[in-house]
Length: 269
Image: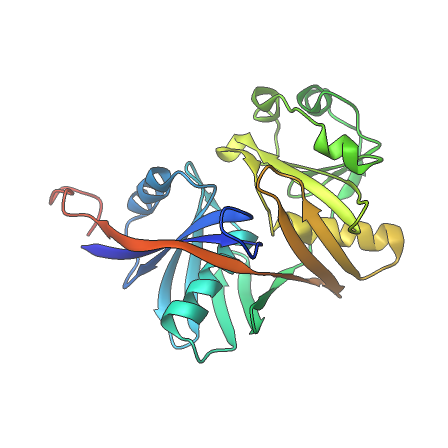
């Protein structure tokens, strides 16, 4: 069995920037344990798996340790593969996922994700969260992840988290954010609980970041930067209960996964 695989740098217009994701194109679904093994072997923050064609695909995302409900950068990477490698005449692709129907449109090199908005409720800062970040945020919201708000971009840039402490939190990840100096807001995202100490650029986190900054500023359109070592640029817009997240992507490599080494007793059919 040979599986086409691509590695795409998402939310960047240059190689070695943004967030790398693997995209595997399948003729049919493999056993979940096989998908998880492939994602672990890739050892990237996310591996996306596609099944389908004619502009509509089923899409799943795996970290090296778990399957997740939503991933922005791997969706952008998957769309890049569909648009560039599989169906170059398309201007929109539809993905069916655990988070419902997701559409990605393209205009020249810019691709726009249409994702569900996410919301958080203000809460007290858990002691473990303050310990993991090494300081107390100005404000904490609880949603699918913790959102921690700080005063300044340098507060975000200078954080040196204790990942072992953050991995013990009850939620899957921690987003930190502050107003930006040359963009509307900046962020970082930590998810050691699901095998991602720091994610380079996190599209799904911006579903919550966009609603937060919209409520705080009254604006609906934003420029954003994720301050990881690789860094990434995003454009975000709130439209009702949807968030539009736009970015670019670059192909780093393509090849094949060879599964001849699996025996007949393997979980792969």
